[in-house]
Image 1 (cartoon, rainbow, N blue to C red):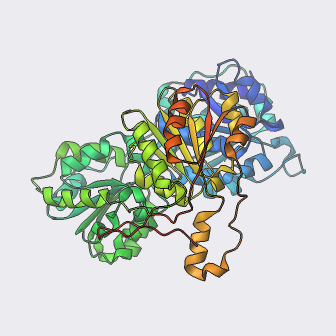
Image 2 (tube, helix red, strand yellow; image 1 turned 120 degrees about the vertical axis):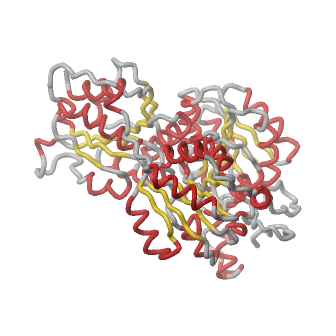
Length: 542
């Protein structure tokens, strides 16, 4: 058996059913080896798209996602998507072909120091140099990707190592792929419970891995058990995530912030500092560096810390309960702030808020529905006007362009769930060719492109910061038709210019059994600005 066969066998034993990939010379041995265990290869049109697919697959399935790309240029194309997966806390195994070990230092085809390039984007990077270690290395990668704060792990696969004959594989068990679990010690858990019980207005802030899509009702149950509001932060706009309404305003009035698996970074205003909060802080995190940074930033406000995984801590505290706290009024106040929404102004062309309302109506009756939302100002309005619990957004990285690959990965993870992906017309340009992948792989879902013929988020910044006469580089081609492009790539397409047309087109797209693009002509609007005060309509950029 070749090393590639050992690796393919380990992947099958780990439960891998699908690999997202773009082919290349250096990974052909593994392509061949994946045939026998029946692991499906979904062949993308760009390496970054393959990683985005694996990312969404991991988020929806609860298992690892696997991306496989070729060496050097293929590897490099994937790095931006790896950063997004890391920030979204997605357990992705990133496999890359590599030049032969036997030719190291001799200028081999596509020789490149992949480990050094990958390390800033992943939890760990390993170049496997012995064919007999390929299966154990994959098991190590799986354990690490799932452990602590989940995230991507990289394995570089030299061509000669994949091809080397190493005899029969050593059988592996599920224990070889099981991630270690770290819980806080009972005394620390008791101290956290007791300290939380002493506050009148505490908030619990969790990371993306405890959101509804991945954690189900775990966070809601924890909040109920501790009698406090519990919020997952997962947006690049942090506290300004339109789905959180006016949450930033109530955070500033909290007397305790309990961070569970969420670093005290920009997403919370650096532990409330941006809101001038004097709240005490409790931090439980699997990463010691996150705790060290919080100590440096927050000083005496940081009262309790523990190095532990958020999942088992959440389970233990849920079982322990609140210690007698009674905070119904505080929880109502936070809920009311979360429910706040901006009032859209009237526009001649369709407003993004109208698109969101139609999508909400189409998905709200399905507990399994998945909303994928990507893009700038259009994406923010969709997040403000939809309340679909199971969502994938572009995550803390702030990258755009992943919506279509996300939809493919999500569909393969959950074949029957109603699935709508929304993206701006700027976003659509990143991976438009993946419509061909969606058609070829027969992954049915609806894609809505909000078409305002501009990079609107950037124009909003330019007008706000430099003046209406200083706009530059933000216009896209008026009349561009993304539905026609999708049709040319094998999908179905609709063009919508009025709100009354959208509902029928979306119903057709969700029931049509094929990937479908709905190009919706919308008015350019600044993202919603939400406040508990009487809202003023958001103004369109000049």
